[in-house]
Image 1 (cartoon, rainbow, N blue to C red):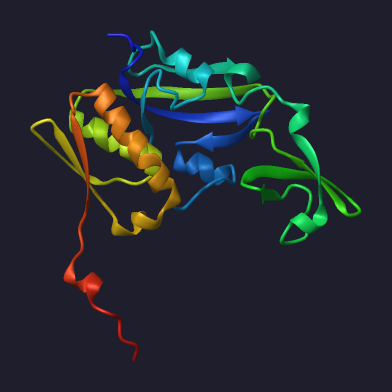
Image 2: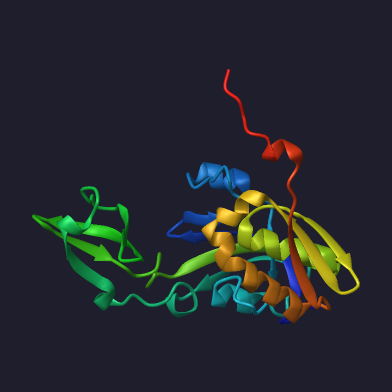
Length: 226
């Protein structure tokens, strides 16, 4: 059967702009392109078609395809990373930065992420547009699998958001996800865990999501220095 909105699928892809790869699920391609992240999760992403887990143009292209499909799609800015807004380029006094800004540096200004595009004397121009805003991109992708197993769906969604694999148990409509205790202090996890639970319950038969932190005695014993 062809892929439809709401299906869980596993996809591998490489996003390119002017033949430069900016995102990929392939570890070797990431290394060759200089974007490898040793903490990243490679091998393919599990996504829900139509849930916004991919840029709009790519998400739409999945629909109607079959498992095993390999192809490319060219996506205009409005269905990729949005149009470029000149009003999001702002000039900011240099004393607002903790370290001296350099062109190309990624900076945080009052909670917003931007890229330094120019430094003129004591003033700095920062572009707060989204990465690749205003640009046409190409995605080469393969639909590797349609996920039917509930446990695999849950694992896939958690892995998509957090970039790690976790133990999952499904019992009587509940999904118990055993997480690493250190995630308690992970800002990405704190923001994502409700969204993950909402998507699991909204797209599967699961009615309850339980996050379990497990501590062993070795974690509670203070380390002694020699």
